[in-house]
Structures are given as structure tokens and as C-alpha cells.
Image (cartoon, rainbow, N blue to C red; front, side):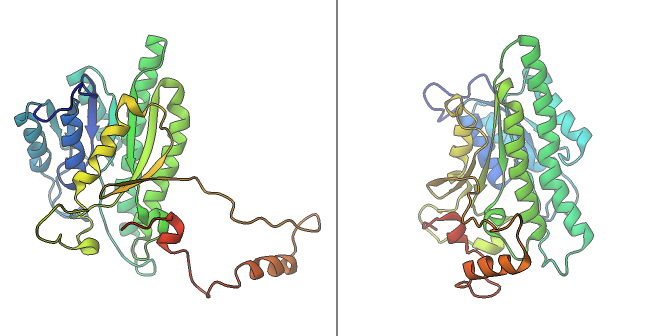
Length: 315
């Protein structure tokens, strides 16, 4: 494939990228193909970023065609990954067409933003379904595939999962309780699955990408004219390529923030302060004394700012 690096680190490997018809998923699929992987491009093809409109094969076919035109191997799949059966068919397609599955990049998602006090049940359920259940469905079938292969071969196999979380989970997002909750759930799914699959040879990591796509157009707006857009999805794709490669064998159960030429490795939560009761257990009065004093300098109602949570200086 034109522009493939020397050695093609993903040569001989098969990848699935969900939500790959546009934006981040498309950039990630193109990058994995550039690195030598055969790619199954999944996209349900609905035109609305809220998951509205008729599904279409167009977006997935266009990305797959672009990969093939550059000399790579690619197939399009237009199933709904939030549907358990269709997610299984997606993994089976990769195995049937290319002999095995090695890499799974979960990216598919929708937005239905609303403040928590006006959010409808459907707005909550639909976002949780596409993001969190969609991640689980494909992960479940990929994990089963690797476990079966490992048992048959009597040794670990090659497996990589890259999940897509968000800074909305890390720092909060007032108008996105459904989205932030789904993205937090994806981190939990990531760390649990990383522990479960390590002995079979698979690694599982998550990224929090910041990129200008149709999902974030209200947040970031349009890029300035001229020069390279610092929030272009193409800045995120190389990290996905790296995490999918043999070079990342020691990276497992990690969460990484990525955008515009920056990658930050996020620590797991740490204890910020600890208080021990002078009795067998705390009383209300004792808790009032220690915790109220601890938060005395924080204005009422204030939460942690994004920079305080992430410790990131670069925008």
C-alpha cells in the first residue's frame, strides 16, 4: 500500500474498525491499512450523529474502496454492532474472509445530548446501547475467537483491542450524562477484559481522543483556514496503529488521552486523602469535622476542573 512504513508492522494481520465510515474511525481504518493490515470496515451508515436516518452501505464502502485503491485489503460491513447477533456476524466475516481476527478497534457511537433533568429514557438507552453495548458485543466475540484459538494452539495468540472512551468521562460534561456514563463504562470494560484476556495473548486498551468530527462540531467548530488542523482525526490514528502493533505488547489495561501531537497516559485513581476514625467506626459528627474541613477551601457546588483532573496544560 502506498506510504506503508518499512517492515509494515501489521502485515499479515486482520483488523475490524467499527464506525469507520467517517471521522475518527475512517482515519483509524486507513492508518491500520497503511501499516499493512487487512481491514473490515464497519459502519451502520446512518446520516445523523444522533443515530437517526436510514442506514446505508455508502460510508463503509467508501472507506473500504479508498483502502483498496491504495493497494490494501478491505471489506465493508454495514451491520449494527449494538445488535448482539450482527456483532457476531462482523467478527465471523473477518475470520471467514481473512482466516482470523487479530485487531478490534471499537469506535462506533452516537450523541443525544441533553441535561440530566430533561433527558428522556430513549435518549439514555440509545447512547448506552450504541457505545457501551456495542463495545461489549464485538469484544465478546473477538475474545471468544482468541480464547478458542489459544486453546487449540496450546499457546497465546495475537490479539489487540483498542476501545474509545472520552474526556467527558474523565472530566465530566454537563449536557452529556448518557455519553459520559457510557464512556466511563467502556473504561471499566477495558480494564476487566484486559485482565481476562492477558493469558490468551490479547491486550486491551482505551483512548480518549480529542478530534474535530461531526460528533464534536458543536464543541470545536470549524478549523482555521490554512495549516494543519491540530484537531484533525489523523492525529489520533497513529496511536491506534501503535496500540494494535506487536510493539505495544507490554501496554495493557491502559487509558491514554490523545490529540494534536500529544499522548498522555492516565493513572488509575489514587487516594487523595485518608481519614481514620478514632473509634471503631465513623460517626456523623466525626465525618463532619474531618471532611468539611478538608473541603473548606472549595466553593459550594464546585467540581473538579478538567485541568485539575487530567493535569493537562496543552489544548
